[in-house]
Length: 279
Image (tube, rainbow, N blue to C red; front, side, top):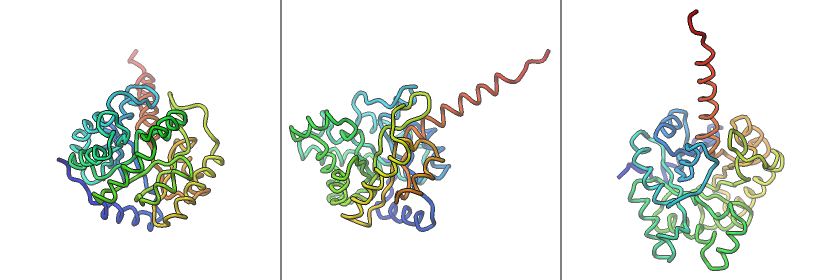
């Protein structure tokens, strides 16, 4: 059992950061070392993605295996080295092993609450896969199940909720719950050794983010809106994001636990190799 942080306290901290003019940062973490360093760096939220393990395997972000089982299994390692930062669980709402019926979805949410996580985000998400999503929705086991999961977390457990949304319809559905934080997703992250090569440019991505943020605020102006992905891969990219949208912060996964590590290790090894031996 971990030491979860109450929803009201998380929101207090986030709103205080915004009031101080500081962007909110949700940091994707999937190892204790990354979680520990992200907390020391000042991350507001530590978000646990099962796919993070694929990044540490040197692969592009990849879904594999029993996602929820993997995420639950990662908690103890992270909680062991995190002192006072909310650890947010990436939960796959359409878990084929645990959540086919509504009552099972409730049990799935409770499973993560009992483990000690401080909140939830809908990931892995069908929002990343257009054709697969459309087919799943025809059989009643699609993105709406992710909405329902977050509704259960909010209404029945008063648990802190973060949502990934991919268009204005998604944004409105999640805002109606309402979720605490809406993260507008503008595409797979570019950059680094295995990042996606095709992505929208900064202008297009910021415009897309703003449209989803406005749809969110139209339903509930109190929701905190963040952005993720696409060309916003490094800290300097977020300057453009904040100047051209109403995003109050950023969620980084590859941007936190892959790209910086790639750079640091390559640079450090080159430095070691550049030191000459005594002649």
